[in-house]
Amino acid sequence: MSAPDTNTGTQEKRHAPSLFGIKASLTYGLVLLAAFVAYVFFASGDSSETAPEGGSALEGYESQNYEPGGNSTGSVSGQPDQ
Image (cartoon, rainbow, N blue to C red):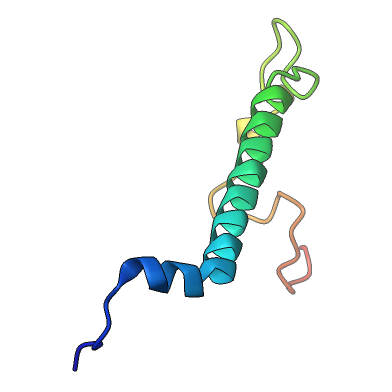
């Protein structure tokens, strides 16, 4: 069944506090989102965590020590080393 009185002006006046709360929460969420995006944008400019100039992210990596399925990475397998 449809509502007998569909006067949107009256309904808007009756629901003003609820509509204000919805608008305020949306505004708050957008402000938080903008602050997060700004933080991520400005924090990404920090180059202190990158590899040194001329260096490599794989510096010190020796492929002969890392066998597929092997346990040479220091993980615990429950088996004693022989």
